[in-house]
Length: 200
Length: 303
Image 1 (spheres, chains in turn brown, orange):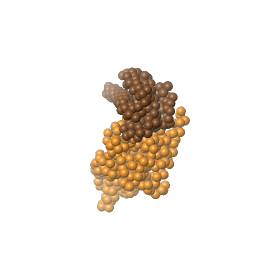
Image 2: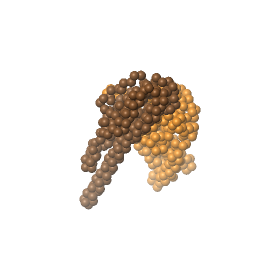
Image 3: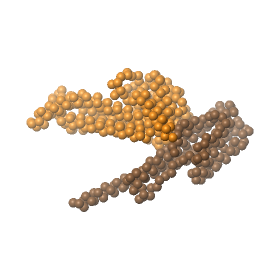
Image 4: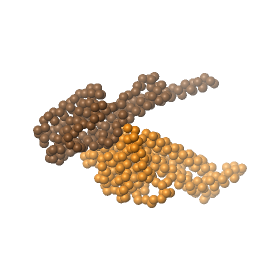
């Protein structure tokens, strides 16, 4: 009689372990997925920039240094390696883009150009999506870390090697606002970056 | 913010459990009080599920065509598309399909049986009258309905209401035809008791069922507000949109009682009375705005 009870208890434990393990796998997969989603949006931004530079060149023919800065910043961001390095490169790129849009304010013909307006909206949208992708990544990390640390999942986590993941954090110097000559040029007044508090 | 979301979810599930308990109770009384017996309950369940199934499965197509929503391309409304896509990334769901309703009354709804088949419809009035942050707040609210499977939950409650309606109807009819069911000689008095209780239930049950269904709907609206605020991390956006929507008195032409529950605010003009509050699909606007403002306060004081 008691062996049956022991077997049942063992079976329940095994089932429990399987369920908890699978849950952690799902949470971890979401984290990885969310991380690559950030990359997808970053790539989108890189792809938009050459077109933007060409369009602006057509009207603002003298701004050579600015175009070079943007192009250089873009290559740096594409080739950046570690997370910290890349975040810094991304911030530089954002800064040069804002300068570019600030300069565009001086050229009313450029501002009225359909292609330019479309690119402006696309870039603004993409920066917003990058912010959302990072936010979602942090949300998945939060769920995963909470999942690995609460009991009894913590036991499974340490048994099978699920380790805490790091949040995506804004670099210290990127918390300073990037200076732009004109007010709100570039149209990057998105809810993802504008007045909302960033998760720490 | 997380607490609001958690408590809304708890409350709606509590309501569902109560609902199921009520339905089981009614089923039991029905089984005892009529000659249909428990088999009748099973039949009612099957019918209610079958009737609701196709409306749930095709909910997106049905509702979109009733509301005269037209599918639009990204090129027609690039900013709207970017907002929807961005928020779907924040929510971690596939991008819902975008639809526009040509009406100057500002409003929006979401539909789709699960996130893979999501759709969001927005009126031209909403696009014109809201600024970027407000529009994002509204879309985040709609996105949250899809993400939280609210359409599926609404279909569940509709099935439960259907079961109750069927059982109540049959119970009343069976009393007209031939009185109650007599099981064995010695249980005459109990039979009468069941008939009386059954009668009372048959009349009250549909009303109670609707009230519970609408209470669930209101909880999920609160949940969509808080989930939406979490997506944008900016509660004032939706709060400001709700204030604007509240001031705009224009009713939406394509809305009717069947579809009114899905919109972000009730698109129909309605009587203001306390009893009415029990039977509304949406919570009162001032309360929704108050909760969002409390979230904003919480966010700023936490820093």
